[in-house]
Image (tube, rainbow, N blue to C red):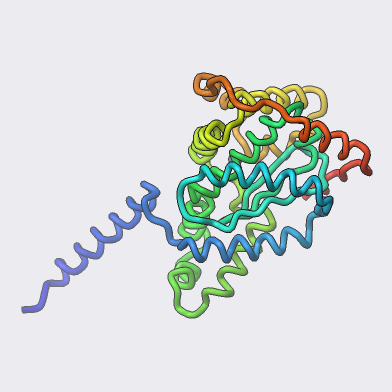
Length: 273
Ligand SMILES: [Zn+2]
């Protein structure tokens, strides 16, 4: 007995509605962990060609050390995390899919203790661990790029060029803006990582206070941060309740890295896009 056309199309509609509902509930991603890592590595190679990287062994080892301590507390897939410093004076940090984290040198200059820098990195590690990039890529594919790319992502031989196309968009800042929910989650999960790794949770809130002060004194230095993140005021109010007390606030090493940076040529201004 052949099922009727009506039956088949009803099933198709139900399947499609479930598919869209699942995507919206963020329980499903079109991008696998492996694809996410590949896209992130490719984007990182492109970013590295564009951005002046600070290649000072002591500074990078210090930032990597903080990052790796946070990563040990992170849940989720075992991503190949990496930590690099961009020689830019603007206060910012960003995460690429599946592992790469970049910290602007300006964030270290602006911080007054180690827990603040650890707080910024914790937020970025949380974006990666919670797979926010995979969510954004999935939404981007669904919303903008049509079924051709969807097919390629689902895997029919065009995977490598898709990874490159997606990486190119990422390296140029497309999809880098996470949703407000993702930002909130990165703050919440980042704060947990920060505290579990042994730092004082107040560092995260203090960095927002620094950002706010900078915003009134020198708007250009934080413009980039505000264009990709919700206002610090909202975030501070939510975080203050759960920062707790105790843990490391500062180290002699942080202060020596800071003075080392101050003795170097000043960081560059980020070119306007
Ligand atoms: Zn963020």
